Length: 65
Image (cartoon, rainbow, N blue to C red; front, side):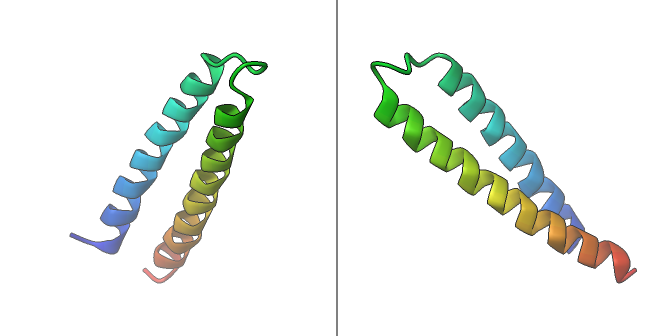
């Protein structure tokens, strides 16, 4: 498996994770479950950071061809 394949697989996984987080946050009551909503937002931010790191690596591999 090539590095680009691994990056692509991980980006797909993180994309699905973002979708799940978004759907989950939409189902919460912000007044009653503020602590959980806050934790999920933090998870979303971490996931976006992971995606940005992988995209940076993806550009590096794309330019090295």
